[in-house]
Each structure stands twice: as C-alpha cells, then as structure tokens.
Image (cartoon, rainbow, N blue to C red; front, top):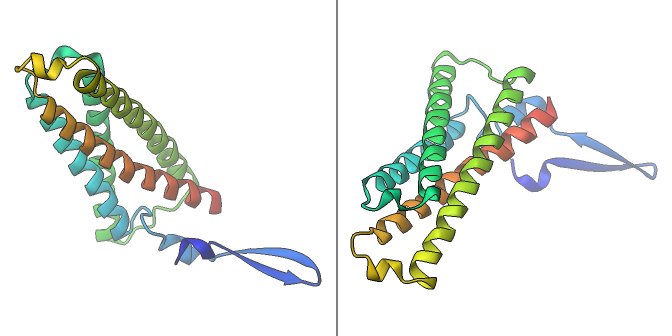
Length: 179
C-alpha cells in the first residue's frame, strides 16, 4: 500500500464520497503492531537508542551538561519502551495474535507520542549544547578531557532513534483513526 492511496476519492453524481481502505489493508500497514515491519521498527529504535546511550555514558565529561543527562534519561525510556513493544510484537507474531483493538492502540499512540516528544526535546537540547561547545565557545578545543566527537555521534544516533519512533508514532495514529 502506498501512502498516496490511503484515501480513495470517488465522484458520484457530483458528490465526493470518501472510501477508506479495508481493515485488512490497515493491518498490513508498514510498521503496525504484530507485523514484521513493526518489529523491525521497534528493534531499530531499541538498537539505535541503546547505542546512543552506551556512547553517551562511556564518554568522558558526560556530567558537564544537564542536557546530556536528560538525553540519557529519555534514551533509557525509549530503550525500555521499544524493547517491551518488540517483545510484544514477537509474541503476537509467534501466536498470530491481532493487536489492533481500540484500547491497545490508544495506549500505543499516547506512549509513542510522549516518548517521541521527550526524545526529540532531549536530542535537540544536547545538539544545542554541542553547538555551544564546538562553535561558540571552543570548549572542546580548550578542554581535551571532553569527548566531543563521542557526544556528537551519540546525539546523531539519538536523532535516528527518534526518527524511527516518529514513523511508529505516525503509523499508530493512523491505525487508531481507522478503528
């Protein structure tokens, strides 16, 4: 299913009739829960967030900025959330369970959007601190103990994890709207 054909328009006697795609098409939507692509999205989120968290925690000078702490906390939340949902996707795939009910999707929408907003805010604030350290004040050049390159790689990985979470959030929102 391509994104352009999400809604089909039919001109019927001068009136526009919106025909939504069938429920079986929505269950096969890219990234939906209980689907192999949904499992790939959750595993990608978990792996990129864990890699970013490991790099940030192993870098020297980690405690110099509060935004690095907030990034670590939001990435920890993202790792736990994505790992739990990946385990749920594995369970649903093994037992061929349907995860498309209104209450469960509502929980996923709220959890995904809250986690996405927190992750984006923390990644943006950490990126802002890195711009301050590298470009504005030259702290990275004057303090050799700071692992600025490691911080930058960690922040880039956090943005990749956020992007994968944003895709999942968008898919969950559309699935909830169709039920």
